[in-house]
Image (cartoon, rainbow, N blue to C red; front, side):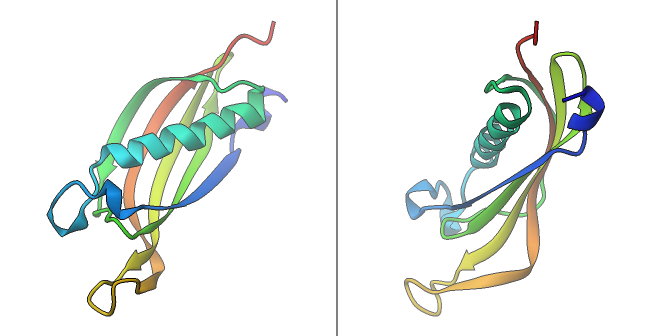
Length: 131
């Protein structure tokens, strides 16, 4: 696959945030949870495009725009925006697509429509040389 063909490659993960990850009052989850999710989805992007897990080199412009809470269902997306010889720059987004509603009942949840953009970032991963 040429470098130009890599640009636009997108991978999306979905996951439930267990209550065991609540870190603060109000069942808030720390920001590192989103960053770890970005790492997971970036790994799949690298496997799909380069046949290797790659290594994260840097994050830039991390924005925590809305809270992530235990009981949320998240959609985490990574999209390649630039491809160098070994580097892949990606844009990331965490969206809350469902949220627990313990006020209604212990196991209640509501679909969030439209989804809430909770975290965004840019990041660079490095993959081994194809040679």
